[in-house]
Length: 108
Image 1: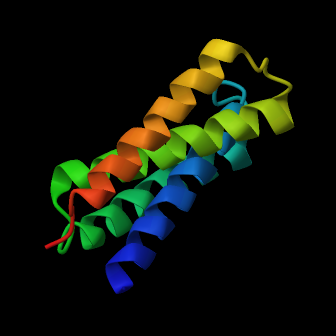
Image 2: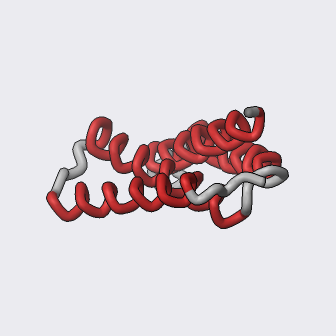
């Protein structure tokens, strides 16, 4: 169970880092720029801990897929990004792929 918490922490930190990247406005704002590096660094630490149990391909797919879906949602809700049919279909395929990999038994 602990490996799932590590993976969840890695996902949340990656999403936080990506959101901070947007707020950094091309490294022109100090606090979001520093926060971005801290979040990404910690995300890799927790992802590394999760890899003690997960297969690397499965862990990375879950990490990047859930992170991508979360960032797309944040983009729509916080940054007024457009919602298109293609974007929704693509995100659905990412989620289906993550579920499929998880059902295939990605932890050992």
